Length: 312
Image (cartoon, rainbow, N blue to C red; front, side, top):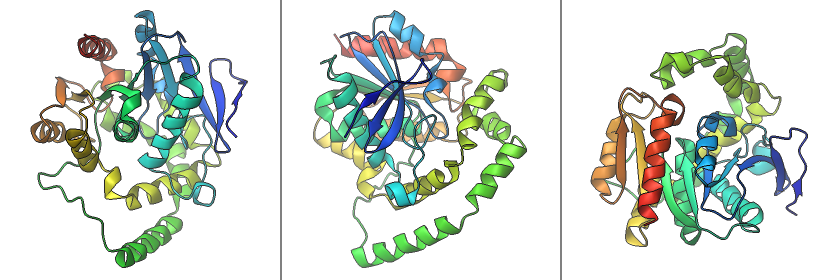
């Protein structure tokens, strides 16, 4: 049973999805064009803190949700959820739209995602295209090959591979790794790699990323993610998803890419635009992996202009 329940933290709402508590946020909850922000790996809804108010002030109904396993949402492990991948998160977002947004807003939705959130948004565009008005991914993970293999492995070999991956993941000392990362503040090193503009790496950003990773359930949930993303079907990978949209219905798609992104280099974005010419690519100079946080004003303007353009 899915219920909306009150939150102790008044800035968030909580919703029960398949028995798990999900944290979500809304600003300007009206029957206007709804935007749903989806955070990247290791982040949460607060990562959009520099964007939400700007869009709400422009009349959009703005929603943000913590994906299962992140932020203030529950962090289930393999025993509780089986695995966590973009298929599971797409199911979460699909039900969120049905249960939370649809009762008060009938308009199609623009999904805006950073990295992993962009992949989840793309997955939803294929799964529920009738609900999606447009997608903004900044950037989009998953390498895109010039030769795309859509075939699945034979079930016998796939079963063996999955068992080996599950064994490997179960043996990983994730608890110790997270302890070391937290104890020695190694998150600062990851942030320095992700951000081109180092002045934006402050205590607020550090806490935003580090606090959820210190929860007792964080390690088991990370195992479920490692297992899920390593064993997901080819049909959940960006190459296949983009091909499906190309062949069935081209949902408007905007890529916003940081020129200096070290996690997912700009070449990936250029390759996507080459293989799928209907995808629009905007490059932000001197910006890294989190353009929305490093260059929020520019990110917001590009996004708003694009949404207005597809709304004509």
